[in-house]
Length: 327
Image (tube, rainbow, N blue to C red):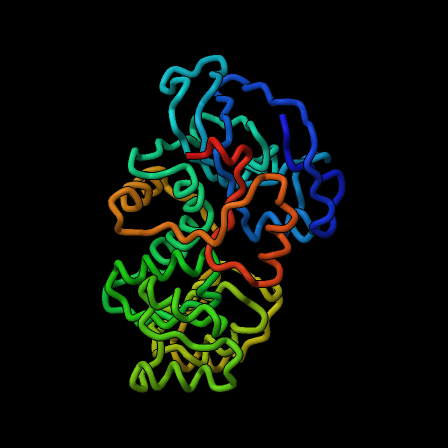
């Protein structure tokens, strides 16, 4: 099969389009013909060495996959050849070879049916981004209907997902992003959009919330935004940290947190299977929309990585092994 293979960590140039042995499904696994794979920030962290790949090189990245089952491993009874499936899980593309390939093997316990109304590309785009936002807002943020939510890095995959979830929950949504992405963010349901380079972001949030501050903040940036996130908070407000795009180590004023009775939550968990199925149904029904920056042939993986690293993407970049067949 053809795959994007990395033999070393480094820049986007370490991603090579080459021939690689087609994997064989083990017991309770299936072989999937990949129709769509999503490029995530996590892939870039694995590629660069910032996150450790937990297997020996050479390695195939890709944590989100949508495709069709073409072979069943021993003991597989609940799935059939031809089933349309989507999967996203922590080990894929980290502890085992991932989805940047024509074929990949998946454990049956990680498979989800793709609803008929959803394309492979749409299904793949949901994966890590949408589940990360869901986990952050529901499991760790305990989102309620009357929230005033600030979303940092709002044009990222997790950010665009969080906007849609927050809008669905009838929250007031304040999105912080690059200025050139304003129109797209309004279309997704943001009520207010602030330029992340503005020197007075805190004051703008306080003004928008009529002096009260934000009740919930989704911080995907980390080092450069955590202190201002605390300043934007209402009394008893919560910050959920679900990413560290600017770096892991942040300095905060503990007294600011203390005086507001505020809290900071980390967010890292596995999506409950029934929640992933509910998310898929919401996409099928049009409640949520796939946010897709571009669809590229698999061999353009290094270009996709460069586009994300340059902060040019809005939503997800999808890689398609055989563009004429993806559907």
